[in-house]
Image 1 (cartoon, rainbow, N blue to C red):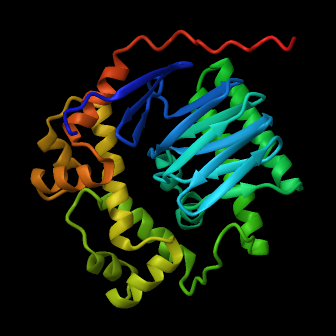
Image 2 (cartoon, rainbow, N blue to C red; image 1 turned 180 degrees about the vertical axis):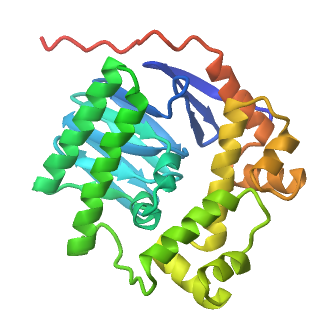
Length: 312
């Protein structure tokens, strides 16, 4: 029910908050990445969240159940789950793993976002031994060390390691047409598309349309619509909606602006439209979203509670 209080569970450095099947990940102030170690058997029922999830087991086999796929992620393997992907997670008694959760928004600001978008919209499973898997695992380990030490600029540094991992996986995909991503044809100059992405980033808060973006690129809207989806992996309207929802979510969490001002600053034409779309996509209203995260931001989340079990 809409007024039902969300479930909250304590985890290292914060809380796991469930509102129905929607999970809201709590982050430390001025950060958007969380890393949870665990050596405890657990089962997480079907849920979704805005964060990208990365599982890197050190021991044991974790089982992910997706709507159309099951992954048995063993020690040494790595699984990247996209934002908004429904999944269950089961971890056995002998598990030892690190779970990374991070918001994809910073990745979408890159000039080569279309390639990044392809890799953040579907699972990436590095299951076979390879140089790529070892390189990506090494970068994840560096991100984990950086996170645990909490050195200055740790959030930025963690993203730097994640970006390197995506760059390596992207190069592998572009050069070998790796089977974990679909093959797409790009009949349009990447520089033009990069300029379009910049144009959208600078004008998403305005009343821009497919026609506006197509005119900026110098194409008809029908041709532009096709090549945009082929290039970015999602339609122009879907991409614009993601940009606006990310902007609105950040404003709801990081500011005290009235909902009406948040809607306007994020590019939504009216409060009613904003509320409807936000509820459809986030499974709660903007006011509930702010209340859920606001309760986390004001909570004492500075005391870690993870303790490594004795090996005896």
